[in-house]
Length: 223
Image (tube, rainbow, N blue to C red; front, side):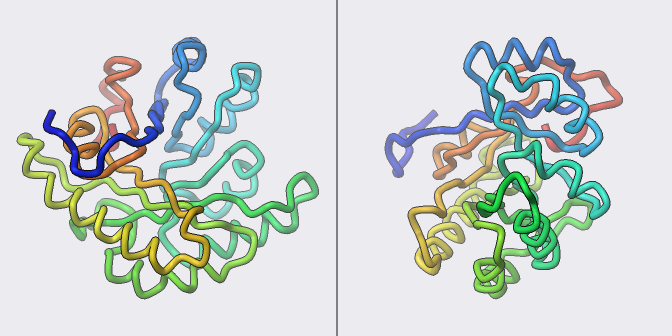
């Protein structure tokens, strides 16, 4: 791993806990991995109430159906896969109506760097054009960007995508009304996190590196 030009920084190591059992998740939390990302609403709703005693901070990192939103919102610290202004509006509306919390819900904007149809997220230029609209929504606070770039067997070939995301992050930070609150750049997974960190990531999402391989039926590109 080469020295990053961005220097030392505080890292968020997030466990990608999709398909993992409660015992594995609790063991990871007790070892210090307290940020967990879930892809499926049903799975998050099952796991979150049973792991409250180990201090897990849950993040939703998958594609979110509108009818599931109100069910997961009380359990998650942040929603890291926001891919439309409409979704941000729905989150904000539910958050402001909540009896338990009137504080804005942290959200991250999902960037589709490779214009891949099978992946969620907005192209960088669209996010840049709509950034003011996201910031204007009540009930949410835009705290960063998340992306799953196109996969390559040679991880160094992913470097241009990570560079592009860091450049977008820096531009948006300069436009943010509270730039100190726009502080999370979530890029890098088990197979490519070293390159992602070199290119400026401060949040990596690790599945197999923490938990080991998932059952075959659970594997996909988001690990």
